[in-house]
Image 1 (cartoon, rainbow, N blue to C red):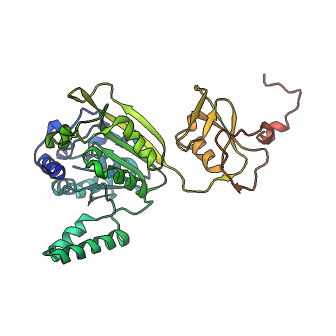
Image 2: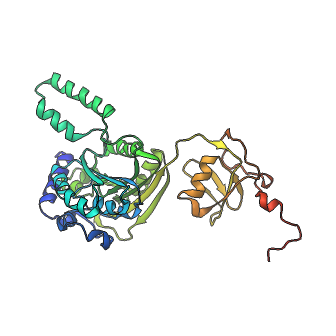
Image 3: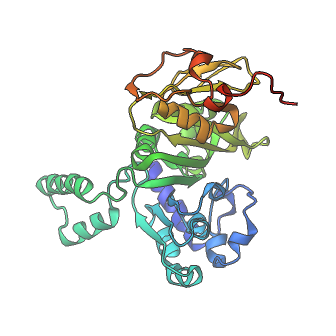
Length: 372
């Protein structure tokens, strides 16, 4: 059976009546659920709560938005200046989510949310526009198919569903596992494409603790049930690192598996990561000190930091390590004299001499003064 068809059919049914087997127990922020229509809450299927990573003013993209619950929660958190976009390929789920948009816009005070039709592994192609094109120009032969494909290619280039570098935060709740294995690399690449430099991800999904045999992958019930299409837990993290993400982190890992099938444990996890600033490495004389507790650590770009040592870093790395997700682990040190800046990236493990990184106000302290 075609796995994509099985997913569409199962979630279409889930839009009509509640499917308890499709979700894990999750503790959501009750205060964010109060204004939501009950139908939206009941027909949501997830395994985590990525909404807790939303910040005020964010432009948020929810992959596989389903009934719209996470989107409506995020809409409360982004505030009046923020925006939320939900993307789903299932017509019934989109109809359910869109049904309550006017009501929620009134409650929120403005219309800061929209739901669009698309595949999460191809965030450039607007499937609502494809549906309209097919209705007006049905494909009846090979020539018509070729024309459609050329039209779609032009559409993704001129009117992408989600533009490059346009999103602050990509969320997803138990959906990536539904994408065919052959499309998962493209899926992660698409997430990277749409994020702004400095943008973040918060992905809740089901992962397996070991390889999933083919006979389980061929089971449409297990696949559409968010089981046999799961990433293996270490490969899940590695796929984002390989796509260019930084600070890839397993932020939540459920101790108890959600299901065990043929000895394989399937559990809910949430990973976070960022898209680094796409800027050149400029040396301005800055340094960082890794606080510990490990003797040394290495970031996703291969830079090594020794505990307690003043490590030479470029301005981009300095900002990432002192203002981003690494900030709790590093001390930032500005140079005594700021360099004008030259294109340079310190080879991994390069130390910055203390003479170059003394704070100017400390240089003038009276030698007889005491800190006590």
